[in-house]
Amino acid sequence: MTENTQKINLPWTESHEAFCYQHHIPPAAKILWQWLMRQGQTASEIEPDLSEFNAWVAKTRGKPYAHNYLKKIFEILVSCRVLQVIKQYSWKITKLLFRPLSWLNPPKKQREKKLYNHNSSYDSSPSNGTNAEQGLNSSSNSITPTTAEFEELERQHEILTACAEYQIYFDPNKRPTRHLFKFDIADVRLALKHFVLRGGHQTIPSPQGWLIDCLRECYWQDKTFGLSEFLQALTSWFPSNLPRDY
Image (cartoon, rainbow, N blue to C red; front, top):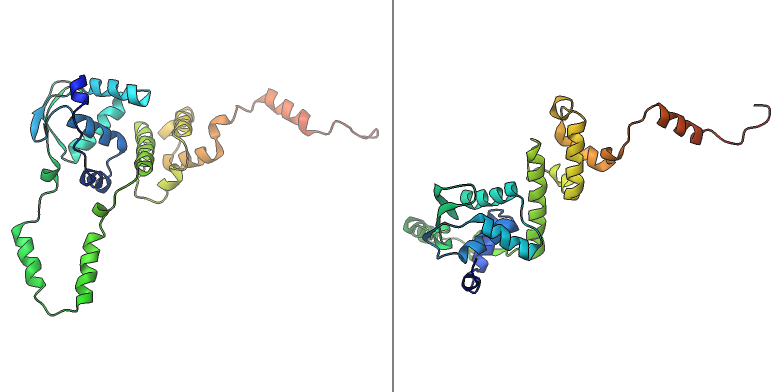
């Protein structure tokens, strides 16, 4: 990315933040979206090189994203219709249509406006109308998440992706998954490696529950308990001072 490109003012607004929050876009994908804004105009075709983005991330973040994670955040923007793939040259170079936010959030259709005006002509108390309007405005679009919330969302996304690499899938909307998010990604990776050592899916019928138990009990810290370990443990367990008549 050239110096001139870096100086381009970022047209990022609170509406963009609300869109990210509503569609559960993690911070890494949001950073990629902002970086793409600097590469060219929205509503136009661009051909970015994701390796350049990763090099830029390495300078600002201290280390680049893993290739699998980089592909994942790119796919998130595609699934949210921010990007439309026109031609795939390689995993890192793609010809894209970069859509503006106004296209992603189209205005209400004329029919919906007429229907709203027609319903408002009914005789109803002002309080009911006020409550209905408050209900519409209380959606997630009116909430701007904090940086800390986005960082936590990115951390949780990294945990889910790491588990998925071992074919262990957690539903982020389920309550048991909250127990998984209590642990650090480093411990999750240790538990996943121990999952393989214990036989993986062939010997563990419920990997989701086993993984959470593994994280709670730190199974990977348990050493093999053989004869030598047994004799050593027995010596330390048996009292050293015995009565003479024993």
